[in-house]
Image (tube, rainbow, N blue to C red; front, side, top):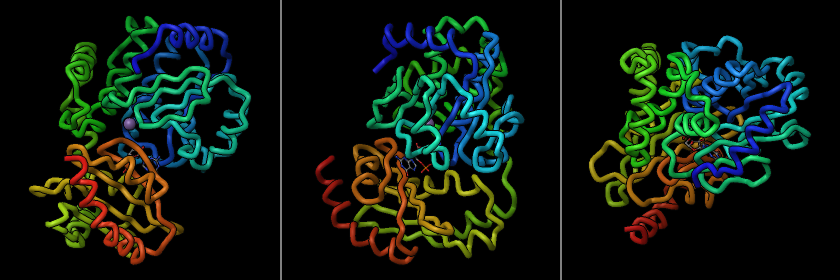
Length: 339
Ligand code: 5GP
Ligand code: MN
């Protein structure tokens, strides 16, 4: 669904009326979620609006190079965030489409009287906001913020700062312009971002050349742990809490590990499992028609996109790995059906 004229008019009205705008994104905010929130914040500030980004929990430190990140309020860590959120009269929901994905903010958001605008590219949106701009064909929420800004006639204020925020989300959510969601339009949007001053090599370097030695050792451990099921075209990569602790795990350290599984020839499904204190977090990546959004929904209380999704398990790590292995015949069946 591209953005409808009626939605644009409604959004224009809601933004005009709003006194206190809060921009939110999903739990474990990634580069797309942060870039979209900070890019939108800059657009709204140019309009003279009072706006605050409130995120559910901590995000990767490397994203602190993004303009405006120093003012972000982290709900889980800062009591001020709850006060700011409760005063909002307009809330943006970016890069998520189900209130459950807002983690610790869910309750406060569920009962909030503010008007809502949702901008997101995940599958199967909940339909409660006043304005719903949902497009599962989009590369990233950052690309959608660009299209939203165009529809709102905001592009004359697009500058290098905003372009940097939006570029980072498009770059990371397309796997550096590799995934099938990368369209001619994506590249046209990116061209416009470069024209106003986004610098690709600087942004790529800020995101990808910020490894600690510990993170590389953790990657080495993950690759060591990797199990390849050749017949089933599936890879399983577990990491235990003990291993995470041994290599001083910090938020964002395991970002992208799941993709290594897919880089093996003929693998169509990669599953990455990390043991947290109270649950196992799973990441799924696939190639072609294998729908990991549906697979995650069916078996791991999750969701996401057709080729990139996540979920949770409340079993132990060992039991979760057993559960995945028991699902291998079903995985093969799903592959047969989609080919
Ligand atoms: P990741 O594996 O990088 O955590 O997430 C992959 C994609 O799936 C992202 O777009 C993310 O927003 C989504 N996702 C991750 N975990 C969950 C989950 O537990 N539930 C749902 N609905 N989506 C998720
Ligand atoms: Mn995204």
